[in-house]
Image 1 (cartoon, one colour):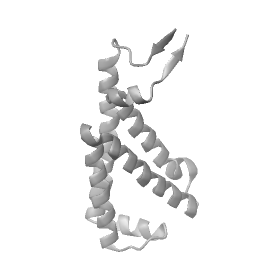
Image 2: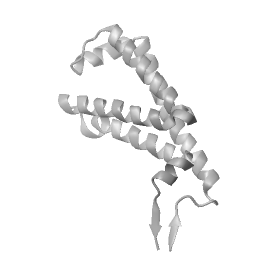
Image 3: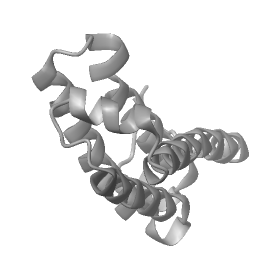
Length: 139
């Protein structure tokens, strides 16, 4: 006999936990995209340290892309597309940090942490995703 993780008694708690987790991801993406739109000097200096051009135009382009992904992820109808695009963005950031030898747990794995938070939040708040990828407890 299998016990589905989508137990009706825990559905409201799962939904709210998923919303909180997703809200943290969206808040981070809005912050990150916003500072790139400015673009603050810390952004262009960091881009240069990571081996990219310190161009304000590049920073703004990344900011627009990040904010668009945040919007897609936040909207229920496009949240899975947003999560897929966010996964690509985070993979690129992780590859960059790996290439320049950034610290493992604070820099390189930050993309992994954010991705797990994003997909975990989406999984908890989206019943269709839970039906597509069911987690079952063995009994």
